Length: 456
Image 1 (spheres, rainbow, N blue to C red):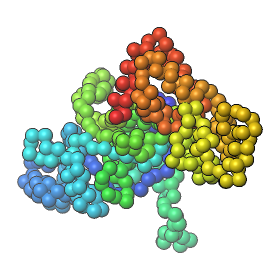
Image 2: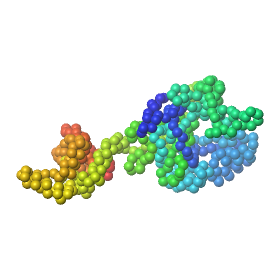
Image 3: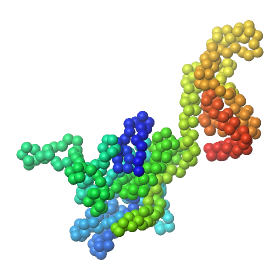
Image 4: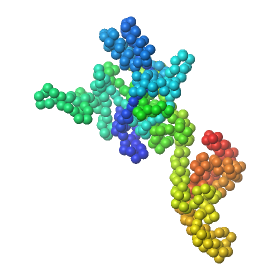
């Protein structure tokens, strides 16, 4: 699996990671768990272990606290809890700096699916960065008793994956006192295998001590929090599927995955789906096992995303018109003419200029009033914005298909933005679309009906 290195929104390419290109870390404060932990078969045989587990669950303690309590009660149990795959996410107060946040999340998005318990099955998320590597960091990692022992990193060119570990703490000249380190502990390449990360030759990976570990980093709409939330996962299938969703949305949004997906505040959603995933058993046979896999959803009409660049172009045109209003080139309350050019009678002018215009009008004998100087400036500015068919011509072409003026104007304004008629390129695009339906006028009417229905 390969993923291109892309510069997005003027930012430099991200550094490589295990599944693609990495980037800066986003601070978090609060965890949502992907599942639950239950007692091992051996731990379930100890009354003290079951008692500690039940008390911890009743007090809504974190799994780490429950595990510590069990280990203290039954020291011979080194790992009394094991993960269990369930269709919901676990939200506990002890996993948040402010315990009330957990209650807010369950109150806003929790569901009771018939068992009398409010649980989190599906919730909206907004990502804080535009590179998926920043909002879904991941690595191969082997943990020790209290810290990471080894973890994977990529070289700057993305070609070499190394196995990294903490460097020994340097000692002073006496050899009895550790040197005070500035900037945190130093890292180094693992001495074995020349520091290369090769899972198939790694004893930790083969013994399941080193595994893929990743996390989603996000905000939840409606939940007030200065820090982002995180959801850990060890599923390659979940992360790989999420990468595809991220890249698809980014492609259609000009490289963006952050923020709401559209003007209607549509967001991504995180949920779980029961899927059969391939698995190689101890004998090397390929088998399929059903698991609840984290699923990233984007419930949005993708055609809306594909139109965003057109609407941005119209917004630029509207901005230019607004700038001319502020500079005194035209009155903001007066509409533009059918051809997108504001008429002379709609342009403010000085009394002297108006008198000179009237003299010019009388001397030429023209049936059309001579434009004022500001009007000529506005006309010139509009011509610089692009030539093309007039708005009247476009509307008349639509009328030939049986579409009344007001309905087409409403369609065009929602299709390309309210400034479509003052931009030559916008008018050409509108007319070209109408002409493309010359042999299918009913199809054009249906398109307008569908567009106005979709955006109403």
